[in-house]
Image 1 (spheres, rainbow, N blue to C red):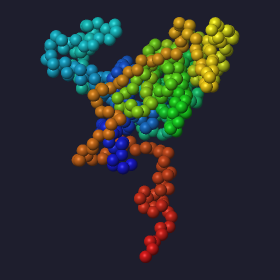
Image 2 (spheres, rainbow, N blue to C red):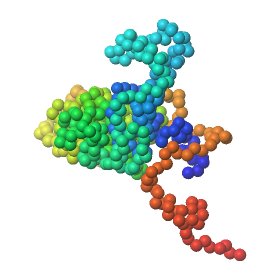
Image 3 (spheres, rainbow, N blue to C red):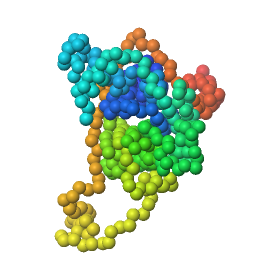
Image 4 (cartoon, helix red, strand yellow):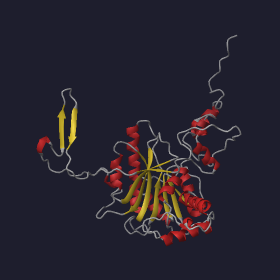
Length: 396
């Protein structure tokens, strides 16, 4: 990778190494937390597709070590700005944004709490975090790492056992007894993209369904689920399916995520299992199940089963859908831009300072897929030397 490559001039790529993050994706989770307050009252978290561990690193530093990032850092910044504007003890300085159902007295108490403990480390008690990935991941403080496949049903008992090694009972079905509730399930996994957008979107949706199917078995009522999604023409169908299990579903686009990318994140809060719904480990969210079709009925104006197909003079088939005046099953999730909009632009490349020193990665890859290729290249003479072939002498 050359010194003038885009990654070297990417602000978040350099900030991640300067601030000690394993990958720039850590800023995505922090900006989502800043917007949705993900870590409020959270002590049990499962991080799916965790390698190289940037999201697990955020969980470790925020929940276990008690450092100020994301929502807490934003609230502390608001407190400092109010002090500068109104002065300490000013009447208006005690007024903060109140959430739904929060009284002014509660907000005053919260304001005083931030003033007393601003900048202090506040680790939480009873925090348990499990990170799962197919690739090996370097260890983190307080994080239990598992090497497993999230699409395999056998991974769920391993996660529950890692959360409660002493009290776990294998006989109790996951998601039935509720003895192993999880507050938050994260999934930042994505397939190796092929460049064929339709295929990449389809594979990513299947990965999201597998993560959701796992989350449905371990989430507590009211829990949250965050997963990466590729936005396509039928992504509203995924939002509608998620709405069946969560009271709030948003499509979040962090500032650190490049606008030129199809990547976004579904932030689902308020988990509630529908009545009568049964989980099938072999069919995530009912995929592949046969749904009986309603009997064929002919409507007026040539509509059959709510559809009317016509062919124009030039041979183009036009399909029209009948509107019954009621809301359809498809639903569009609210789109939210996360992070400070005046911060660094993830799509821009910035001029490198003259005195800049290149930093090494915080955590080098433990088992990169290109490791064997690098070894073969070194055996053949290195990156810029001979390649193993005989070098012909120039003609005199």
